[in-house]
Length: 231
Image 1 (tube, rainbow, N blue to C red):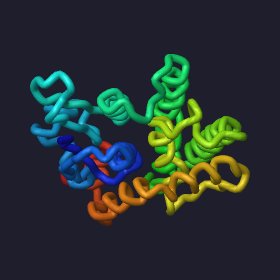
Image 2: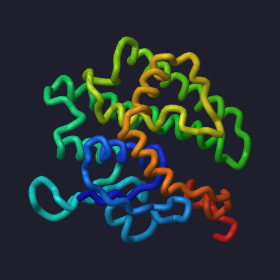
Image 3: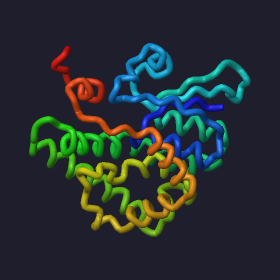
Image 4: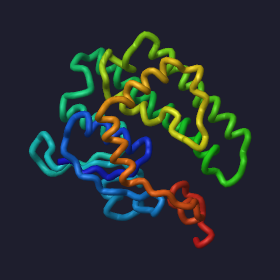
């Protein structure tokens, strides 16, 4: 059994995508990041960087004590190794998947996240930041679009943890949509993954836990480290 400490964000969706595809039994433990759950001592024991998602594997392969894993990319790699699924068996294929997994972790996620922050959440209008991250998000979409030319999946000719990591970060901000028209290959690939039954189940899980709340000073402090007026 996998305990999944989760909130419906792009990084949270990565893990439910894997668990639903693999059919692994899991229990969700909500981490309401707007309410500050990520700072609770019990959560910090398994995720010292106070970020979700994190997992606790109650039945690790070695039969020993439960194993906790934080960081979404590390979780995907751990689950792939545990199940032997969604990563190729050969060295070249595994390396290809690893490259694109790390491309998402180090590039697409952070840059698109900053795009969303300055276009949706920032308390003041900062044109330089908005333009900077918009251009970088579009550049990365161009990289992915060229990669997907003539390909069904991102890496190793199979649906892999690289696809699962990248998919939730494609144009995730409904209040600030990117122009996806130039990226026909990305749109084709994204639509195909969206149709997968496991993807639909994973996102349905997210809807069950979604909370809409006002961005009060305290919520901003919890989400972004912005000082609260009550601090």
